[in-house]
Image (cartoon, rainbow, N blue to C red):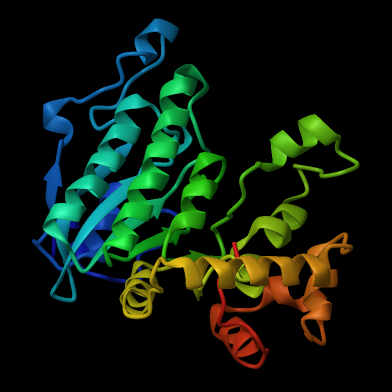
Length: 309
């Protein structure tokens, strides 16, 4: 019988949502090809958390390194949502930025970022905010050099705050039912605008507003995945092969799509109103669709091959 490591070292039906960052990397990449940089044995930990009497992680909640995906050389970063919600701090951010900058020299086929984050750590706010800005710049530099950056989103923490900003700079995004993408999280919106504006406890509201299906339908993601490592592996390989260049024409086209989206849906009060305007006959049924049925729905709609985040 294969041991646990052997089972996790191949793309299987393992739940992406339930898996840890290390399990996702091990199962996503070709078996035995991952080489970690600054692993836990080197204990590159936050110098700030002890000041707040908070525990630290030996890898500071992010796994970075190099490996192969279907034989193609890739660089990979995977956030651990179960450590401080995958939040960005000084070391966490430096590891991601360092990986991206190193990729400019090594020129892999792609860089994969496995997002699972609530944003910036409040305890390391300045360092975390700086890391967000440096990460976005590093992604732009990589994309200008012709190296695609693919974001995969399906973890427990979602992709919020600065993570949502970083996701918007990626070449392509794949998201699952469990994934959520937004700059402001549900609790932040409720705190600032009140529960009447956005009830963070209404899980159905949260998922239809920020969830993977809505993001795919409105152009905020380029692929919708079932909740398996195998599905994310297939999506990553597909998106690597059709990543857009980062040039003036791409930026102008995306800006035009954003303006058109605002004009078309700006007065909508709920995602179901947007889905109806997209031509979906039964908007209320969308949240319950399987990944296969949802893909069929998307295939029947016009204008889904776009990215306007």
